Amino acid sequence: MRASGAGSVRMGRLAIIGAALLWSSSGLFAKSAFFADWPESWRGLQLAAWRALFAGLVLLPWVRRPRWNPLLVPLVAVFALMSGSYLSAVVLTTAANAIWLQATSPWWVLIFTFLLFGTWPDRRQWLPLIFAGLGVGLILSCELGPWTAGSNSLLRPYGRMGVLLGLASGAFFGATAMLMRALRTEDGAWLVAVPHLATAALLAPWALRHGIWPTGWQWLVLAAFGTLQMAIPYRLFTWGLRTVSAQEALLLGLLEPVLMPLWVYLAGQETPAWWTLLGAGFILVGLVWRYVFLENWHKNQLPPAP
Image 1 (cartoon, rainbow, N blue to C red):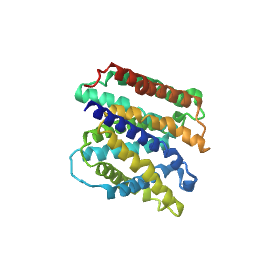
Image 2: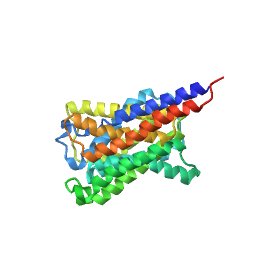
Image 3: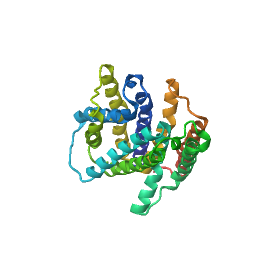
Image 4: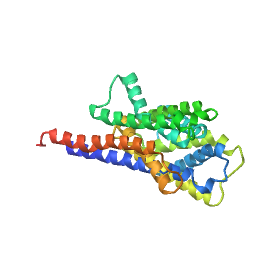
């Protein structure tokens, strides 16, 4: 039983890592030349609406046990708020700031679980939390500091509001993970399709108000965007949450902001700053220490199975 349980947790972690890998491709799609003719000021909401629509439509044929659950209401609400606040942060500040502000989600889960349940994370989670805090803190202090005036979001109009919305997106992402964890016994495809389709409906007024529709190859790219960057990874995420806590899932999900600058750099779209590389290194050190050294040490302390 213990081996079986350990295997389930291991598979759950691998599923969440797979989700983070696919999530990290968002920069490649969002910065694609296919959408260069869309006005930059509202391109984020336009992409989000179509991405959510395609993700929901792709998942619908896989739904096997659609069932009403009252927790779907707050899930839809926080999922839509997460999408809206994150994309608004991208518009009002920089994309780099937005993704790293959303990476505060593990600490929001820590706060929520303490306030709601009076519990703290397992002691093995504290070291990666601290290292991740150092990494995210370094990146944000450099991105938002006065010595980086060329990319300083606070020098832009409404830049401070963008930072606040980015922090809010981290809180909403943490709440999304907690609610998906609470709903883990529901049909996974149903659990992911509902918030995506609801988000597409809520963002539709902004996406369609300019009267610009996708054309030609844009349809195919948007379908791939919704399928590869949202539908499949969120399905993996919900599957992993069956055996992995929301706190640990979001820690593993920090691989997304670590990898996204790498893919964008390899595609020749952006070059990450030194603080991004150093901050990402802190996060990776914490994760490697937790899942390589501490995991092996913990296994060696267990008594042999009878």
